[in-house]
Image 1: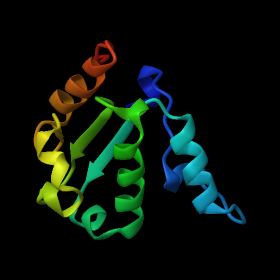
Image 2: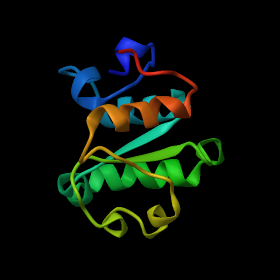
Image 3: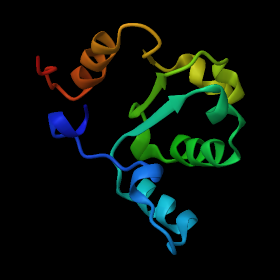
Image 4: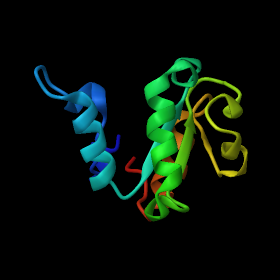
Length: 113
């Protein structure tokens, strides 16, 4: 959906390839990105690396008001960070099209029919 609407993104499962120093690649991606989208799931809440990436984003002023939690599967947000309760989040557990519209609206983009 992001690609279809011209939104560039970096996602480790797609963009990391064999033989790369993945921790360096994640750091470089965090330095390049303008927004931090956190896909919230119970697995993400258990991931040390997701917490490290989130902590880095929370500590960088350039991400202030540019962190968007996407709720893919219900999970207490405080498992990732006690600060997330104060963030506007987008709920993807129900109507996918509605959630996509809400996410794209952040960047002033309308969902294609």
